[in-house]
Image 1 (spheres, rainbow, N blue to C red):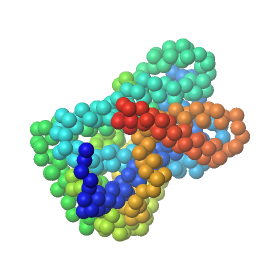
Image 2 (cartoon, one colour):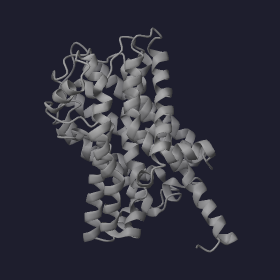
Image 3 (cartoon, rainbow, N blue to C red):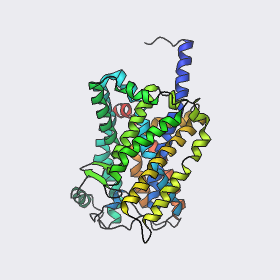
Image 4 (tube, rainbow, N blue to C red):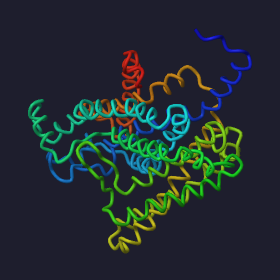
Length: 405
């Protein structure tokens, strides 16, 4: 049995929970953004017309169901989401890495990550992804036969993994940092020095983040096809963004090495105090991204090299400003978490894993309804949130799954 906490210790734990509350709430919020993103793609104004299941390019991996009823606003939502939400997830995932490495060592940390990320990845790839994409098979004209679907699936040039791609990439990043930590045990402290003083000067860390992002993103985006994904079996990743994602992961490691609730994530730091300024910061970069896309699809666009360079700069600036805006907002306004918020945070991982199945099937079931793209998108989002939330709560009751999720 553990001895009861003293008044001082209880106070310290309470303060720690309060200082971590904004990060937990931000993580849950980004999970909701992911669900919303996938829910409304069905009604995206430029969603592609369904084609044969194996027709190249295989666009149903991004649009499992396409509804002829559209809503233009979903195009803007998904555009802004795509600029930052996955990068921010890698940043948040990196925040507790330094603490894990110090507590477990490189080997123990990697074993824990393999269980936490590897096991759900196998489960998602082997079961959830085929289940989620079955409506895509039906809408492409496939026979309502599990055997026919399985045969078509196994003949694809890769194994679609859906949102689970994030898990294997995050596991790979963890393996890299664990290996470097084994060779150079002070690596997290070295990274932490880059983030020291960010509570007083968040702009300095912002400039470094943007610079590192540009160095890793521009060379790839200027030499690979637009929107290209590298696909090897179930291991998928956006080709041009892999280095950019690693930068955000390392940025999270650096900030976490200073201490979660301290430095950049200090609720009393300058980032939180000037939250309103960071809400305005993304305006010009996002407009720049939209303008670049309009020019790119105009009848007489400039050279591809120029478009990729300008678009790449605008992307990196948009990503950093939007991430800072979200972090600043939650640091400023979230000080504690209620019962509903705690449940959402506890089930966010399970919701991320399972929501895609509900998004696809709800979109398929609503195809005959004449509600319009706005109402349908809201209905699919709400339904997917509730169903994935309940599913996660049920899965977490199982002893082994509960430890993982």
